[in-house]
Image (cartoon, rainbow, N blue to C red; front, side, top):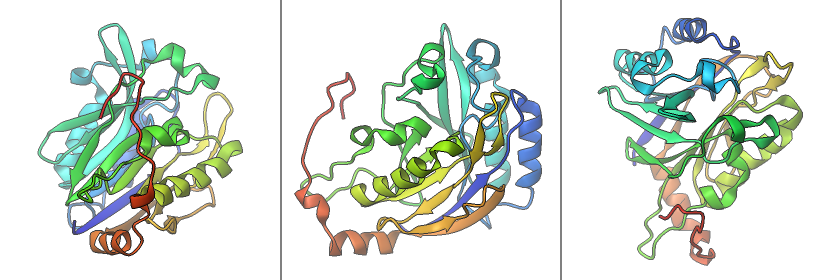
Amino acid sequence: MSQLRTTLVQCDLRWEDPATNCRQLEDKLADLSFADTDLIVLPEMFATGFTMNSREMAEPMESSLAVDWLKRQAMKRGCVVTGSVAIQEQDDYFNRLVWARPDGELIWYDKRHLFRMAGEHERYAMGEQRVIVELNGFRILLSVCYDLRFPVWLRQQPSAGEHFEYDAILCVANWPAPRRHPWRTLLQARAIENLCAVIGVNRVGQDANGLDYAGDSMLIDAKGVALVDQPEGQPFIQTAVLDGEELRQFRDKFPAWRDADHFSLSCGVGY
């Protein structure tokens, strides 16, 4: 690992208006390039807001306006750009986190835990695979919003050879303001228990359902200390650096993973 320059984009979103959201985001990102950052992180469902109108708003990957926009932004800026979008695959619909690389390659993760309190489990299909990507030597576990509440799904198990599965968890969200305390607490908990950094990006503003979003986007190191934290509930774009050598030294100095309990998942997903 070397260093990973990570840009958090906390923004308001226009409801079910992909063209406007992409245009406004492009304006906000106008000054960012490969000289400034390695990774740009957008909120969950950045093109539409947290819509349950999957049949109306989801598009196939190959014709999705939002996915095409992600690809173009990554290639234009020479860095990875990521955020989740509503995707249709034949008769299924997914809340899909798309990782767009500057070489045009797309990697994706389908949200595993669907927020039943909003009926997401009735409108979207459950993802079946954990996905780990790599950038600048950092291995990053992808996750979306409600996934954050489920530590078994996100928990890593270093091997006997001291090989960590990943070095950071990335979580994009539309997490409402009334539950901002759990959001902040869980981001820090996932970092501390997994000896990894956590990148959490949430939206601000109000959606068409009258839900308010406070943001609280954070970049947290493996000790649970926030490197980025602006809890004022306002839009912002901020870049901070994750240092791979600092992470390695901390893991060597404080090898709590050696005393962790080993387990296996029994939900039809093996790793």
